Amino acid sequence: MRKDLKKIAARFATSKTLNDFVEYGGVAAAIETAEGNVYTGISIDTACSMGFCAEHSAVAEMLKNGEHLIRAVVAVGDDGNAVPPCGRCRELMSQLSKENLNAIIEVKNGVFMTLKELLPYDWKEDLGREW
Image 1 (cartoon, one colour):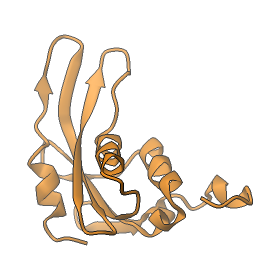
Image 2 (cartoon, helix red, strand yellow):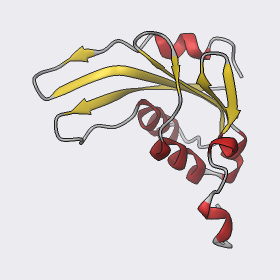
Image 3 (cartoon, rainbow, N blue to C red):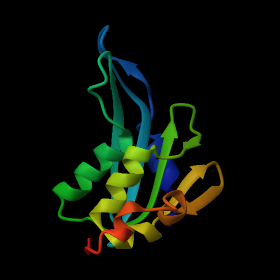
Image 4 (cartoon, rainbow, N blue to C red):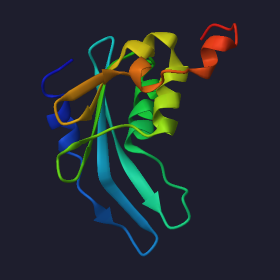
């Protein structure tokens, strides 16, 4: 895992208000891929829950560039502290590839876990299908 991954994410974690309905950037994420590239994303929060998490935004950038294998992920709030991915983000990253279960996630400042540890009872394992 890159030592500067959190610093990269933190550059984009600045909460901004667009209007009465949309805030963005309160959380930023950085994903390091198996190829060593880093993709970033920001959260979008809307009045009617149509926004998305920073990790989803970073995954979209990664996929746009033809990659799907994750080495490490960190998300930070606008206070610079690491925050764990929500269940929806964990699930998205795990569905991209079974190999992503080995990705290292900073879930709290200085606390690292694998995605597999965050999904201990993964429903996909019982399907008998490869992903």
